[in-house]
Length: 225
Image 1 (cartoon, rainbow, N blue to C red):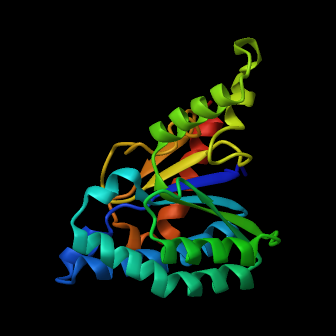
Image 2 (image 1 turned 90 degrees about the vertical axis):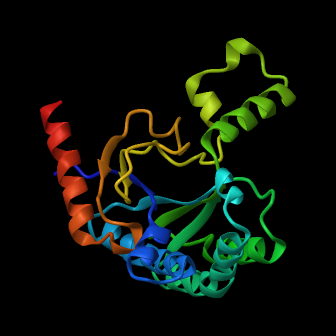
């Protein structure tokens, strides 16, 4: 059985999930956060030990002030519980993205979780928060220029060392929720050869059945190739 080593999720549709239930969009963000450890547990049972979750892009800061505030509050409220859950499951949390614009108290929640789980070995949850792939690539180029690297020394493996996600392996399977068929500036380098699965469900409803279908499709594709 061919199992992807690294599954990435574009966690889309939290607001629409809430709207469909007559709830405030903030409830959708809470439901989305609470679904992360459930999805992680499912993936680990399928022997997938690295998952990346795209929960907030650099473009999302342009949303309404109330929605931004509600999400930040949700992270401060539910983030420590998520960190405790990861720690109990021996899962390490890492953050891929920029620290710019993130409120200090929210950044502390993220950094505390990273510190708490840094020695865990069961799996990795890569949280893509305040992340944009094009900005990541531009930032990598700037760092290479700053380090005065000779052009002849810039190979594909070398360049990857300057990305937010290094040293994580490439993404094997990309799962997007929310019925949308686009990358949304997500891990463009890392997903260059990833298989893609799109679910009609919103992120808070993604469950074992969706992940099984995605992995099955991945296996079918690999067998055909």
